[in-house]
Amino acid sequence: MKHSNKRKEKDSLGEVQVPKEAYFGAFTVRAQKNFQISQFKSHKTFKEALGVVKLAAAQSNYSLKLLTKKEFSAIEKAAKEFIDGKFDKEFTLDVFQAGAGTSYNMNTNEIIANRANELLKDKKGEYKYIHPNNHVNLGQSTNDVIPTATRIAILFLLPTLLHEITALEEEIGEKQEKYKDLIKVGRTHLQDAVPITFGQEFDSYREALIKSRKYITDLSEELQTLGIGGTAVGTGINTDPKYKQNMLKNLTKLTGIKFYKTKNATEIANNMNAFMNFSSGLRSLTTNLLNLSSNLMLMNTGPKAGIGEIDLPEVQPGSSIMPGKINPSIPESVIMTCLHVLGSDKTVELAAQRSQFELNVMCPLIMFEILSSMELLSSAMKTLTNFCVKGLKVNEKRTTELLEKSLCNATSLVPYIGYLKTAKIVKETLKKGTKIREELIAQKVFTEKELNELFSVELTTKPSKIRKKLVK
Image 1 (tube, rainbow, N blue to C red):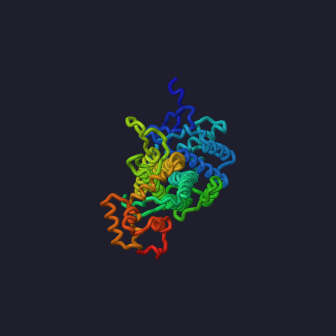
Image 2: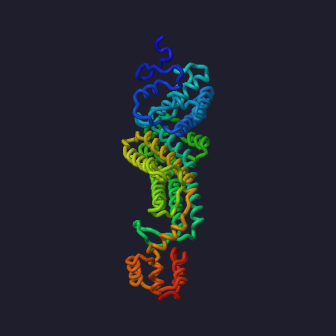
């Protein structure tokens, strides 16, 4: 029999053939047909957040006596199942879809409605007791649901991101403590500059991560302000006067996150700057990870003809043609991830600029890029921590050798023999191919013992009083 595996549903555009056992309905089928642009699907956390919004709405409408006990109980159970992932295979729409995310919203409404009707012994697609629009979407619009769910999803993913930043900070902190007094060549412009300890260098990387973590945390607070209850254009049309406050209370209780009412629901619907600002926090973190990874690669260059101050863990052979070659594979993968995230941040910025009158319809794209970036950064940091920084070893012999060969100790001589005499010593050292220490001893400027004091951690890597006994 033709269409035996299908059921008929009608919407405002006409009749639609829907898979008989599907929990989604006519709107989703149209969206599946219309939007086959990519293989990109929404993040699972976004789906969960949508379910939370629907559950909170049902609770709010029931408390306002807009849903019966029977209707509420069915929607509540269906929404909880949706949140728990029971219908994940029914929520697979392309990210690139009609603006604002109406397809996502209706996909959710239809799944919950059909499951609720099933619980009430009704057939899928008939909507005898629970209707996707009239009941599940009651008091809502795509225009306040999708931005709200996006905010909640970001806040759901935030603890994992912050945990991975902290874990990387702590691992770098262990290296900082272990090598806190080991002096190495400090470099500026990729040239020898002045001495610095490994501890000081690693601590600077750690401090950068701490700042990014705090920046991201501060920016996330803006996402706790919601426009839910504003419906289509922020005016709250078709909502009970108490609905908005009920939604905030219920969302706070369901998520454990404190939510606040926006001062202007129209502004929050058309202004995506809160997302753009949060994305800038991810950009800050990404930039720090890029710098850290690049520095690790540079310090690891070699093993014989490079800097070779550190040895990174050997995670895989580095070449299909060069036997024995080992590459800094983990930092390379992190850099690729970071470049991808920076592209996503630019996309968020451009999407935020597409506001027209009372709505910015680019929220589905913003959602996808930010959640993807958070997940990528969390995974990249976990990889960098566990497979690179944790097993990193400083080559103390090579580090000391480069320090002695370099000219970076010259600066510490200036208070004791003056700028011009120091410059002369440097030039003679370069000309003869000797070391500064050797030249100073040969010219009887300082003794070995005096140089050990002059080139100590105390005098070369931190503020210190001039040792008058050493002034020549």
